[in-house]
Structure formats: structure tokens, C-alpha cells
Image (tube, rainbow, N blue to C red; front, side, top):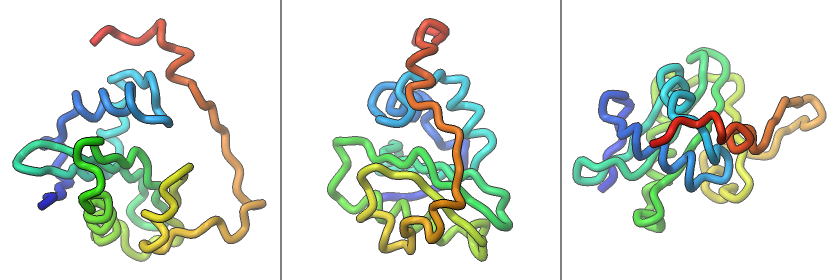
Length: 147
């Protein structure tokens, strides 16, 4: 059974960085220092089986009005066992994420995971704007420290 914790001292930062930098479609090439800083300034959820981290989710929030869910993943060897649903249930039940006016996320392929938790396409998409730099970390690969 997946155990979910928000204790950042339990997070396996090496594994999180390796997945994001090498396997994710959204943060490929991300420097470790950026991952560390993002964890430091976010509400993080680690999913653990037998003491080993197999899942992760991060929420950027002011804990009052807004939250943005990012970096959600389950390691490939542990997918298809309901871990992403348990991880999302823990995220949605967290006391700091109750009563928010807006809770956002971006996904290209996991709509079926998020819809049961109340996520829908934006009601007024014309009101949303963004600055988006896909491939940002890959373009800086020459600046990446060696692992």
C-alpha cells in the first residue's frame, strides 16, 4: 500500500531529479539545483512503498486562495496499481489546500486521473495567459552540472 508523506526530509531528491530530468516530458534536462529550490518552496507529496519513494507530486500555493499542481509522477515499475489515485487523494485532502478559490494544473494526457477530483477545462480559457518556455532546460544543457 502506498504511504503518502509531506515530510520533505523523506524525499529522495536524487530519484525525483533523475525522473524529471531524464524521463519526464515537461522538465527534461532540469538542473538539480532548480529541483531542490522548487521542493524547498512548495508543498510536496512523496509516495512510498516499503520505505522507498515511488511517486511524487508538488503543489505551488499560498495556502489561502490559489494552488497549482505540478510534477506528478509514479515511477514506471509501479504504475497501474492505483498509486496515482492515492497520491491525488492525499493532495486533495491536505488541510492547506481546502477552500481555495482556484486550483490549477496542466496535463497533456492524464485528464482521466484528474477529472474525478473535480478538475475541468478552464471555464473561461480566454481569461488565462501564460509565459511558457518548452525545452528551457534542454537548451541550457551545456550549463548542467554532471551527475
